[in-house]
Length: 159
Image 1 (cartoon, one colour):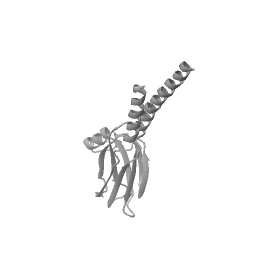
Image 2 (spheres, rainbow, N blue to C red; image 1 turned 90 degrees about the horizontal axis):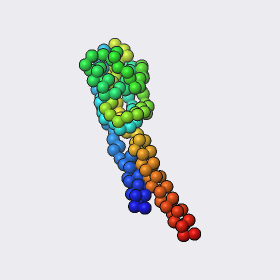
Image 3 (cartoon, rainbow, N blue to C red; image 1 turned 120 degrees about the horizontal axis):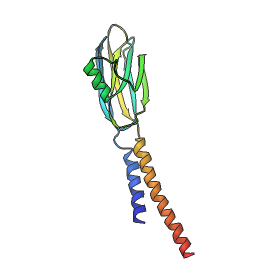
Image 4 (cartoon, rainbow, N blue to C red; image 1 turned 135 degrees about the horizontal axis):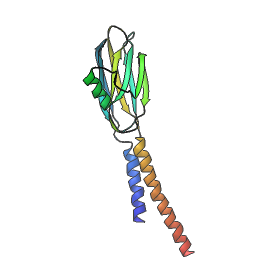
């Protein structure tokens, strides 16, 4: 019975922790045609991404793994990378990027026209963290199942 109660409490704590760690960050910069800029960040799950730019300046937006960001910097090119998500020729872009595993990720921005433009990015964590949430629920339900099973067995023995 102690194990079952411990599992319920542990599951509840894990579910509650799936809602912690919310963060939001943003970055803005001026970029020239032919250059690319971006941001790297660590995330444990999916995130909400907003990219916007000045009127009349089109952007290409690439979401990459941390390894691909480093590869693009090393090669000074985006040719040998496999983006997780791409949006081309946009003035305003908003989406939820689904991330399957925790780690470092980056958003790279390039201009579509031969000019200089200003862009801004915002990242917000999507809560709850689905991996922790599901794991916590599974542990909690396992504990509840053990408690229910023990109660049923007690009634059968006494009856």
